[in-house]
Image (cartoon, rainbow, N blue to C red; front, side, top):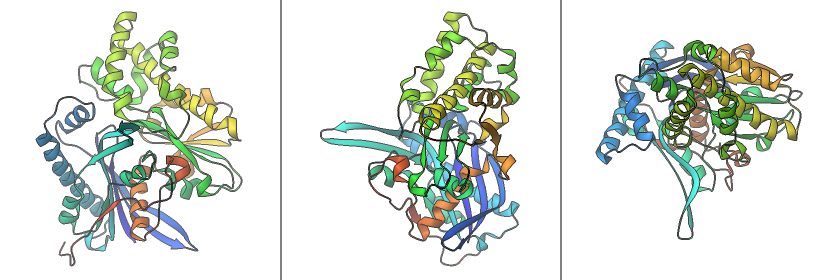
Length: 391
């Protein structure tokens, strides 16, 4: 089957789209990337989404509108990635869409005797199915949460398929808006996989860059600001005492913890400590790297061997961040996905193509040892495509 995977991550900068071919041989899926691209959101959409996810005052009408508008942008991305891969839409069997997360609240809020976990992704899948004529499977997190899980991370299912090895123990790190890790012990089964969110990825650095440059820059491209700055050791030590960093897995997080609220707090700390903007960015970069290293050392290396760390996501493009991670985890080898034949940023979109494929074939894809769910469950909601396609 040819399947398109779509996701916009916590950075809310655009739609990652991957067109893949999936085959099943001897009961095991084989996935091949045909084409991948990132389609940036137009105009002020990123700011609107970040404001929404950060809890700034919004009308329900605005949320309703954005849900359908983001659905249109996801449908556009599906059409464009098929065109890039030179595959007619009529030849695409499925679309798997993660959508755009605007809230993820895995820590239960008690309503009487009921512990309520919740999550909300927008990007209306009915719009995607209608515009493309392709059966669309979306909204993958809620069923796992209904079964008592955290609903995240979901990428470990693909990590296991691509990177498990009978002789090497690997940690697969994704540095998107949030950083997460999958530990694949040599020879271990899927059910023995350990994975969890570790803390901020690019989210905190990006938010601070936007703030200190007055919106003139969106990211610390090439780590240039961090390289010019000096890490404030006292502030870094304070950040490393954050309760999420110390918390045992299973755990997942998002912009609610490491977004606007923390950006605002760090800007105030920088003013009090008289830190230059570059020093603040250097410290935030060091915090991201240290949180990753601390989690790997505390929850992975202490429980078993580790041969290498393979890193994907947008964070691999920040050489200052990557160098610090390598330094902190030495002598364990740290390398990007490209070094083992995969495109760093394509992995998340490929994940939702694979999850859609498995759901279509009635195969559960949550990993209870990862999310904390009571049992394996089917993920996603199925929106049938057109019975006949004229596209």
